[in-house]
Image (cartoon, rainbow, N blue to C red; front, side, top):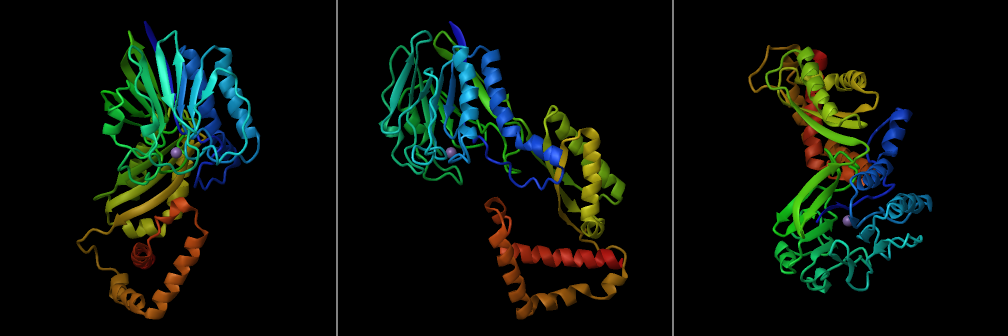
Length: 407
Ligand SMILES: [Mn+2]
């Protein structure tokens, strides 16, 4: 007997895509719809591949619904599977824990939500599959997986668990457990959720994070989706990632080492952008470009960053009308060898700027300014803003700007 099932997690339905800085309303709308489009693609895939069932390992919702349409959208999606006779098994994660999402809507009876007060097992007689799982009652959970039941012999055992495992940075306190803890159960497959990066943690037994369904910021780049698991004669024979995202993020690092002409900068960036565009297969695409390396063009780049960014946006639009350069970042530097002596250098800019940087009144003003900006920033941008680093970067940009203006 051969069948497949789909394992997804972290749908975070209606969570906004962060930090797009989009001014184009039409493009913005396509990005805004990406999360729901990914859910639709997930359901389409389950139906098209005649999946035996769908498993969702937590965080269907991002938090309490802004209004009931968020919940209704998910019910309408999952009900399509119900009508096709495909059952769904869902645990609630930290984002949609029992105590976090106050509203509940009635699901079709083939949709099984694991309870939060104890672990539960659901069996599928036809495939001889048994699924064990438990929903998060609250946002933070310890000592959780120990409550899961022993394996059922002669059946394919699947554990459904929302967890940070252990030692994954930024994921402490969410049903922590180790790979060894999970192996001890003797299950065949652990359908995990919570960590947004796709990862096959282990293959004997299978321990899998499908990754989130839709990248939501520049930190969640590349293809996103779910996994398809194929079972043959009671054994898992294949675990394949499926790209189901409705829009994509890419962060391209372009090395300008030894580049001396601005045309070459453009050519290198356009080549990298074109490659990312091809990989996205027609999806709306938000691209951050970071230029690196030591180049004599450094000062020019700093001085003209915004107009170069606009030129790149125009070139990206030539590829596709929703291929969007989210931001052009500069991490270039001047080559260590002094270039031609310029009037800028004869001013001894370095000494001037060092004097300013050592001035305590200047430092205090700068600190105050940075704190004011920090208070207004969204959380995901905050750790980009370390005061020391910002001060050093500002000083170096000031040098480059003056150098560029005077050369
Ligand atoms: Mn989570």
